[in-house]
Image (cartoon, rainbow, N blue to C red; front, side, top):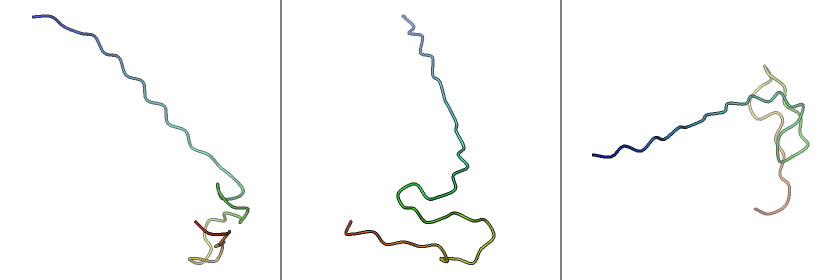
Length: 43
């Protein structure tokens, strides 16, 4: 029986942005739902 060594690496990153990733609308914790929404062009 032969064995193969496999080593994995997991990296977790947490960002604290001032705006959403695909739009310029702000992110603010504690506001009402859907207050900061943005529609930019067709998807």
